[in-house]
Length: 193
Image 1 (cartoon, rainbow, N blue to C red):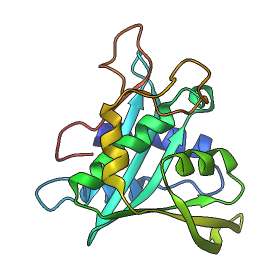
Image 2 (image 1 turned 45 degrees about the horizontal axis):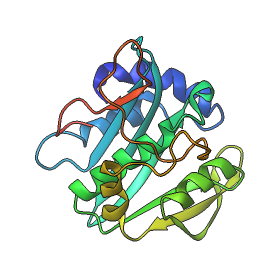
Image 3 (image 1 turned 90 degrees about the horizontal axis):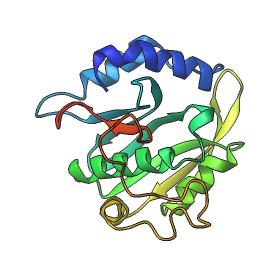
């Protein structure tokens, strides 16, 4: 994600999370920590072949622990494997940051996202009461103890992809975008998420 992605990401953010959308200031602060040799953040966007933004995700890394900050996918692109590709890219970023574990919070009422995280090896750790405000919705805290093994699997063929696999089965990473390719993820440069 680059600074020019913030406005389109904010539009998606308000559409996807109307009650607890992040502000522009929050995204600017995250991107400020995503540059240079002391970077602790990686933010990615997913674009459709026409260049429109269809998803995004972010990771923070501190003292060997990664934290998935956000993943958002437009409804029309859910079930296409895009969430899996974004998550896998964030897990690769966690290994780049030498994280030995990755944590995340997910709404207790978001069963599809919980299933995605479980497929990637995340296990429930606890509940944060009233975490999502102002709706006062609880968050399920989940932990992945070995992000490197799940990030490395991105280079292996996806089992049964396209033949009866679940809609969000982790697919192979998509090639660079072309007029006929599915949405792709990118981060700009190696030091800027």
